[in-house]
Amino acid sequence: MISTGKVTVAVPAVPLGQGRLIRLPSRSTGWLEAPEASPELAAVPRPEPTSFAVLLVEDEPGDARLVELALMGFRRPAFAVHHVQTLRAAVQYLAEGAPVDVVLLDLSLPDSSGLATVSRIRDSAPRLPIVIMTGTDDPRLAESALEAGAQDYLVKSDDPERTVARAIRYAVTRMSSQIEREALLGRIAQQQRTLMDEISAARAMQFDLLPRPARIDARLAALGIEVESFFEPSLGIGGDLWGCLDPGGDRISFYSFDFTGHGIGAALNVFRLHALISDRWSPTQSPAQTLRLLGVALRGLLGRGHFATMALCTVDLGRDEIEWASAGAPAPLLIHDGEVRFLDAKGVPLGLSPDPHYRDRREPFPPDATLLLYSDAITDAPLTGGGMFGEVGLERLARDLVARHGHAEIARLIEEFERQVRLPLEDDLTALAIRRLGPVP
Image 1 (cartoon, one colour):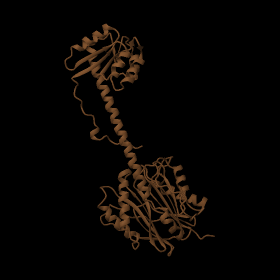
Image 2 (tube, rainbow, N blue to C red; image 1 turned 90 degrees about the horizontal axis):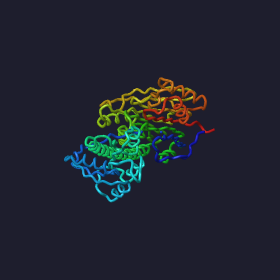
Image 3 (cartoon, one colour; image 1 turned 180 degrees about the horizontal axis):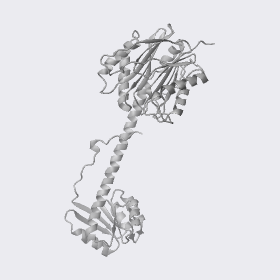
């Protein structure tokens, strides 16, 4: 059904992962890797502590005395031991805010036993390293204790002079590393959230560069032209864009361009070129003249290896023709009277040559004709069965849609295209169909 009315759906901000299909004048409705940690987030070597405050939770006086004697012999670092005999006393001591660097914890206390003892200490002091002491040499118990939140495991039968101090140092170091890692991951997560917010804002800005229906619907309706488009950057934002320029009278112009690269860098180039089009385009210029001016200007703005392909065409209703020029863009597809054929699209991409030259071409564009502009994401897309979609796939798809429905509607074209190719695409996708409406019966 052909509609020349007002916009039916307008989406001012498009969420990530959701494309936009546009019909003008009738309009309907395209993981980031974690950013590299900045240098200030890198781990800073810590000096060796000169002393440790140890909370010893042990109900056997003899075992507690052995630990105290083992730690008394150290001068650097020194160990200050506070001994309690019950879990309740340990929890109370921690609640009082006494300085504690590590807990030596017996798993068999008068008021608590087993791994629940570890959990109680962790609840009281989540950031405090814990060394388990038990009389059972059971690897499964040791593994369970570490899973419950302890940092190390000691068997009481081991030589305390050789093992206790080492276990304390290891437990403190391991907990410090864990805290630093959690803090680093938290900062990276915050950076990701900030980056996602910035990308969402940039995406909304990029979609705002698309033609606004309120500004061109009436003009298109008066000319008897319907425009459908699909636009979806592969990474939320990207290097594609299409637009509409109005020379006045019986003429109207359309363009589509595609920058090398993806993401933020390509999007910045999109804003550059969009600003240049606003500044350098004139209704008296031919498409080739406009491309030349843009190519010269971009040469001094783009980084090494960056360039853009672009197609620019003008529909001239007075002459019943289109005039176009191409800067290396994919060959436009002209559809009329059941025929589907590619047009010439030779031309150097914008930004590669300091003195580019382009050629204007003309082709009849009678009522019921459609011109399809698109990005190479379509022709370069990999097929699910192997190979590439290519111009052959696009021509076959367009012919099939024309045979079944009378014309190649963008919504159907994209739907069928996505059935045949392997998703997600690695490139920004743009498709623009400019259709001259036939006489109203």
